[in-house]
Image 1 (tube, rainbow, N blue to C red):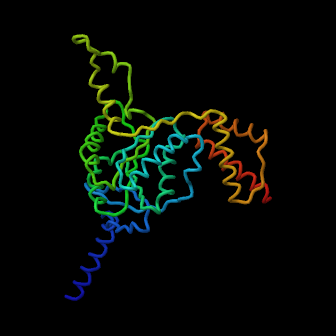
Image 2: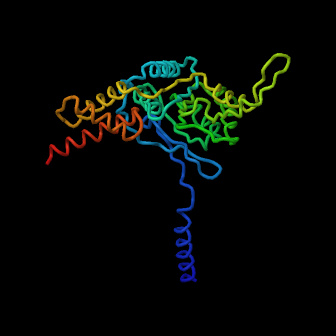
Image 3: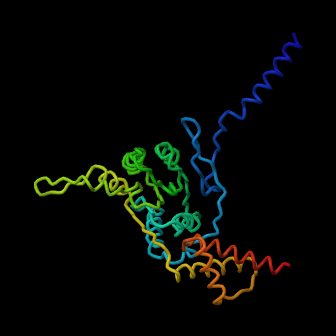
Length: 296
């Protein structure tokens, strides 16, 4: 009997060892005094908040040439932190111009005042009521952050976001706000055919329902911030800033000259764009090469 029991226990342990990797991980209890950011992780029909280790080394002063957008979102965030009325915000415009960096810089500036950041993917927006419920009784102030938000043509999921904004976040506790970034102002593609079906009724022009749906989605955000392509002087200003920052960290001695400026412009030309991301990448490349040469 003892041998049969031992054999059964060994087999049971073997089965459990194979099944354990397939089982959902137990939710992690987050200490919001120590954790400043988390990501909503979908698992089956439910999900949980997964704590993130984030770098807080980028501040608002590192965002060059977007002063108006920076000041508006920073003011909205300060209102939020102080318990005053504040708006959900949509940051839209050209890629690489600092939309996501601005949100993360706000976390760096205000984490000590109780600001926390929750990343949530576009495909998980239907879980927002559940996320809000988890956060509602906590003393910290939470920005729910959806990066690169957009919807494909003919996709009906964008109506979920409209419902969520009106149905939960608008009535959510005052410690929750939504910030989203997108390359599209209205989050969904706009086509000429959307305007081809206007009707004239008693002298009034009525746009199609497609146009109304498009505008109604972005209207749920009370604050719109627009980001535009960089001019060459703006791009070079950002390049210089990041070289200064990276060189100071590594002790590199350098100077700005015409040859360096030409190299930076050629780098942007080879990538087909001038923006903050391109400027940061060039600065890392250039500083890294200078340090490599100095260590030979």
